[in-house]
Length: 276
Image (cartoon, rainbow, N blue to C red; front, side, top):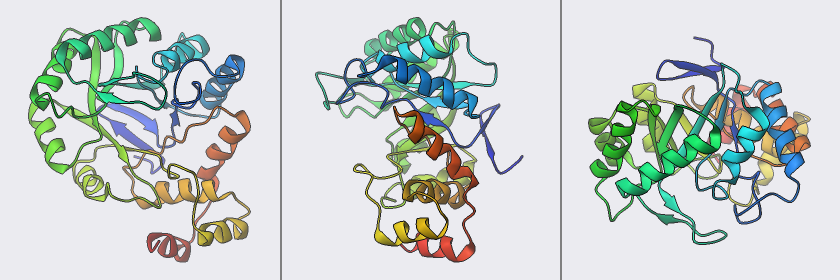
């Protein structure tokens, strides 16, 4: 298995993917300002070698999945589209957990329609709803999997105990949690993923505001790279299970993110970044 790839169950993909949250409007709400540019970004991502695109029914809501289908359907055989279900969206920047089985079933049916699929390649429970037992939420997705509407299942925004419980309910092939150079609260879950050889998709890999420490900026100058490229390169080097999914609605920014795979960090660089 080459270091540049990882297995989602029995599906092998390159480890640098694309997050399709920010191709929507401001507040992850509604259409993007330039729909044509969003479509171009998605096509450019696949042309650049992306084999996993992360989305969710709540991105827009619905907009991200609609754009993916508009840009890429019929899909390349080696493309894994990973969607999520488990949030309501009352308005821009607003996220309300909803893990009720009926909501999840409706969300999956909607994703199937928007993505123009007979079966979704990967569905991740977007979050654990504190008002609904995890067994009920995941149980609904397992039923949909048995019905042939979902190929593989994953979880998102879970702690170690929740991941352990989820694995007792379903065959979990991936985890998506917040993780990055400046926020490593997800490290315990990453360690479990390493032990189990589960892909870990870090969201907000550059931090919520995209600001990185001065040391990272200085390192970027030495490597003739951007600070964001350094942060993504560190993720790729930090763990073979990490699958960075940096997102953008800008073709130029996409090209910069993809070039992060070519940044060769030295051992001294990695030690310095690990110490941040």
